[in-house]
Amino acid sequence: MIRLSKEKRDKLILVSIGAVAIVAGLWLGVIRTRREQIGLSQTKLEKAMEKLEAARKMVSRAAQAEADMEAASTKLSAIEDTMASGDLYSWARLLMERACVGQEVKIIDVNRPGKGEVGLLAQFPYAAANFTVRGSAYYHDFGKFLADFENRFPYFRVQNLSLTAGSEGTGGADSSGSRAGEEKLSFKMDIVALVRPNL
Image (tube, rainbow, N blue to C red; front, top):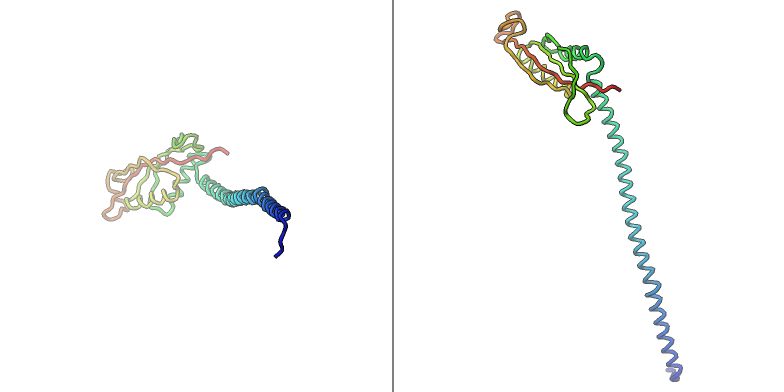
């Protein structure tokens, strides 16, 4: 083993202590600070990636929302095609003629429609056409007619329905061509239909 003099040994110890101090200083001052900065940068990067993913999802939802909007617009225009427009009286008569096709119902009278407010929602863009229909039919035939009418025109509303025994103009059973044991009914109903807004 090499013996060092006290002076050289003290210098070696001081150099060693200095080297340890410098390494510790570098560790605390530079390396640890850089690690903290890297950790902060990594956290910022992860947050940015999360924001990017959320933005991508939003963009993909925007495309879906646009497709949904297009489908809803198409559906609305199809519904508006069934709404009242133009001459409301002619429209109401044609509507009832189409509704009676294939039905055992006789429409006697369609009153001239009156135009009014729907009163459902504030600033509702549609007006209402109200008209009264009178006719005659057998009970089951009228039930089928009414169900078919409400299914074919779900945006119309039938209200104030009244049924009375006997067809229009007779005071009881309809003897001409009546079915065995069945009595013809007279009916009167109000129909509320939406009117297409002026484009």
